[in-house]
Length: 301
Length: 258
Image 1 (cartoon, rainbow over the protein chains, first blue to last red):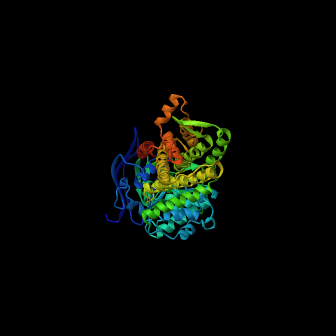
Image 2: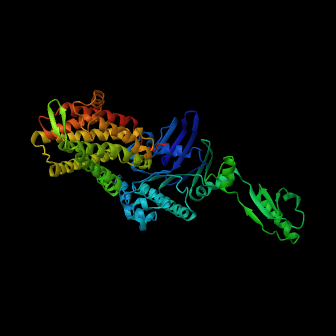
Image 3: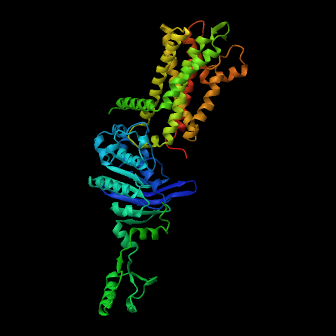
């Protein structure tokens, strides 16, 4: 396909006996927000650093904007923005000086002040980097990645360690970038981040892709059971819906056909004049899928 | 921006950050002058036979010696420590992911260090003229002197880059760098003049490394005859610079060592 920005086929990376990436295939299309989701140590950073040109691969084909990142072509780096997991900038330069410095490396950079505003550092424009908080330094990382007006952005765990407010803000920035038509490749171990931002998610565990697709279909394909929950009514349930589990005073039914089950349950209750207290219908979240697929290794924060 | 423009911007940016970091500015600029005053006050009244039949007053000796020391501090010591720091802070890794060519980034750092050493040499010489009756070299000597300073500054910069490969982390950088350079400064007669009667082993060790050859060329071109200036010394320094460059190209790391 011509609009594929990133194509990966059979990518492997071994460190001695350890297989960090065990043969993965990926395809990221232009304008897409693609999330590589997985627990720590699953191979996310190894994969993204191969795509960024920092690491050699052991085997497989990789193409980024038509280039092999291992060639470290300057032309490719002019079109890509990178937010690494942990990088620094000179502590003695100001925010504006730093962004302007990196902007000068690119053929058609964005306006420096605009970029500083976009990441919410307007008030810190003339502050030295050494005076910024951790969250502010992370925003500066994003500003630097945007300075060259790249068409493709790599974000390696962009919100790890953020407080909820900073996270919302970062998400807004990423959504804005997506609206501008940028292709975004992000890694994260937060399920909600992938669910909220990505058009497509690939779940990686132990170096392999265990699931891939839009967040909504991932849920349907891999864990289709909707959960119906309500407080135990003062009568026995009809046998057709009575395959739930009891959690304290609550009954939980994992329904393969939630519409039918819910219909039977509610018509049974209406006929008897019973109010089903605390009735809830919960679609499984990506987190449930994720935990199932990665064998419950999630939540390392 | 053209590559020449990018190089100039790197030099300007490095310079800005250099002066905003009080420690780097202080140690690089104040040490050579401080040592010049201290050593001259302590040892400046004597004289030393630096070559057969060549006797020199120690107060003027230290003007040339501290100029050599200043060049080594501004290039070798300063680059090895500050680049280890930028590497561990992840600045090098980030730069590596940008379109800025590696050579322009490091070239800018080296060019800044070389410029700083030229400024320091001028300051040290001016100080020597004002307070220690030193004479400025003129004509051919001045040319020899400037070539020695620039070749030395570039060679010690390359060796500084190579030394970062020996530095396990930024905290250890000053220790590693000083462990290498301080003994050599003493063995090469920078701090205490090595007379003809210095131990043979000490002279032999000094002859292997570039510091003594650099100092000899600096003395010879600063004072003129009968003090010997030999292009051979400059060549040894340049050869060490080439070795340093080769080692740096082979072993330099852009990523933090953990």
